[in-house]
Length: 238
Image (cartoon, rainbow, N blue to C red; front, top):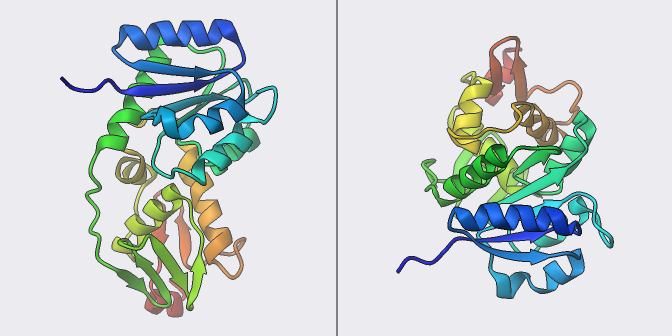
């Protein structure tokens, strides 16, 4: 018999926990609820969730703070953040903490379950990108070691930043549209905000560009998308 997918819910609102639990169990999921973030962190290993749903506002730590702590233990488990905040800065904060997607309140049962199922599908997909080491000038990406170096210095990247950079490096000097990047990095069934590509590109530039405000490696191509430039192209003034 196939094991049930297990979803951990971290929310201090009993009504929300009951509603989400009811809907998830109807879809055949096993649910492990926690009202306090510290309890969730303590129970993370035993719960071994396939997906985590966490609220931004919690009584002890905030959702982004908890997600950062979870990511120190697991980079693979998909995390959906529930939030009443929807400004670009709040979205960036939620994503930068390590969440894979966010869902603004109020939301419908259909949208919630669709996001959960999409995250689980994406987490179960094999990575179709080659695992060979990639090199563009002094930038080296080793997929087996999950390591990126620039001029010999290790660059710390989140899982999504790593995968986005890998796609760009495999297609160096080619312009890739936002839709193509969403499909390759977040999956064809991604239903979140398309601005996530721009947000992650900004983070990559902050880590890889000498002058992030005037990027030469990671270029925005007007009305077309993004391109990672090789040294020869940069030397030509692209």
